Structures are given as C-alpha cells and as structure tokens.
Length: 203
Image 1: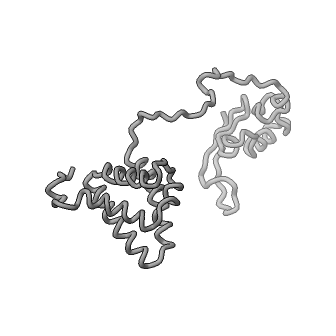
Image 2: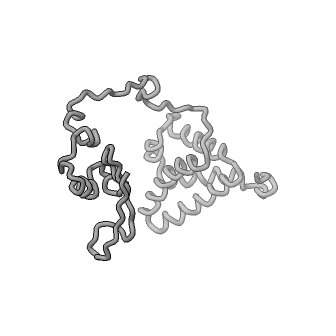
Image 3: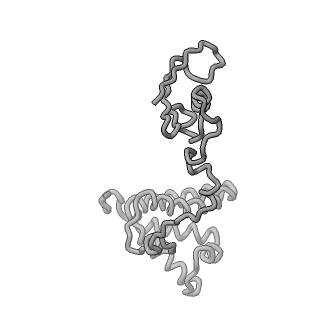
C-alpha cells in the first residue's frame, strides 16, 4: 500500500489541497474519486508505476471487467423470473369497491362540467332561469332528496312516449322550458307545503 498526498498550491491542480490517496500495488487500485467512479487507472497509478520502473501499460487482468471486450462478447446470464409475478393483464374494475372522496369528486366534476359548458353559451334570460333551477337542485342535493329529481325525470320521460333516453338523447328530447319545469316540479315536491328545514333532518 502506497500513500500519496497532494502538496501543490497551484489553483489548476487536479487534486484537492492536502488530499491523501492510497494505491494498492497488488491490483493497482487507487482511492481517488476518478478511479472509484470510472473504474479506470488514474494518474496516480501511472505516476507510481513510472517512478517504480514498471511498464506504463496496465495489464488487462488488472482492469475492471466492464472495460474489456471479452466481457461484451461473453454470454450474459439473464436471470429468469417467473412469468406469473410479472404477467401483464388488464385491470378489472371491482363494482363493489367503495370510492374515496377524491374519486367521487372527479366523477361528479365530469358531469357538472358539461352543465357549466352549456350554461356559458346561453343568453342572459335563459342563464338566469337555469341558475335558479340549479339553486333548487342544490337545495335538493343538500338535503339528500335525489329520488325526487329522479321521479320527476321519469314522469317527464313518460310524457314523451315512455322511452328511456340516454344522457345526450334526454337533453335533446327536452326543450329548455321542459327542463326547467322538471327541476321546478322536483323542487316543489320537497319545498312546497312545509319548511324543508323541518321536514328533513340534515345529516
């Protein structure tokens, strides 16, 4: 084992001031950062070999295997993993899994976004009517009266021939006045005749 210490005050020196490195003569491995990180012979090794009258060329058996052509040509043994643990398969949705609040918020936002986009394109008179209807719906939602809205919607569908419309078909089948009347009828079913704060206990 040979110790080398840097004593130069030159600002262009490659080594840190007062840094000390150790070189093992058996395998010519130096403790400097260059050789530790790149696994290549450093200038300290070449300096010592020259000072000790060794050949400047480092024997290949002393080089790290990663730099040898024989390593590249050799057949690498690939570790085989069991296919079962790493198999690719589609993720099946579990219908009975309870959604967390974040999932519920994302799903609800996708629905309300379509409403917001439609409202932004209405005229001011229609917009005020629609906002008033949404306030009524918000009151129903606040007190958990979701079935009232569904019942009123189903009754309105029966008036249009009893056909079950999809989301877009239902919007096309009902005019704006019909849509407002559905909301107003649903709201009236809860709000009319009694104060909602007394008839429904907030949860």
